[in-house]
Image (cartoon, rainbow, N blue to C red):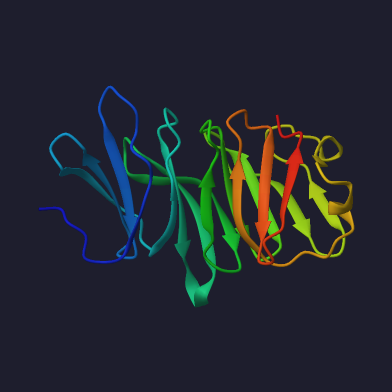
Length: 193
């Protein structure tokens, strides 16, 4: 029946013409579901437990965060038509949650005090990186965002110590990113686009 036997993550349904939804699981598979029939229409093996999933509309790829060796994490790009993992594999200290921007153009991952952002249809060669400790470090991203163009909406964001990140959201214009930390503080950054 194509059902799940391990805990899974789901991506929002894809828009018409074929309403589909994707799920990825700790069993190391990505499944595509036909929402009209409720049936699994394809399964791809990832080769590692999947802990995060982002499927950008019209990009033809799924971004997966996986559990790798010794508790480390990896972010992988899987080509939906072939079911093959392709391109760069981004290394993380631990598996990370993935977020897709409201417009579907940017994917984000975060762990502790670091956020990585990259174009949904692109690759992971050089993601935009925001590191927050007592000061903020921004490194240039692969889609041409200049580090100096990214600015915090709050002037004190550059000097406040940061608690570990808990959540991230990117707006529909792919221009602003909101980063929430463990204290409940949210910092908004502008200048992605």
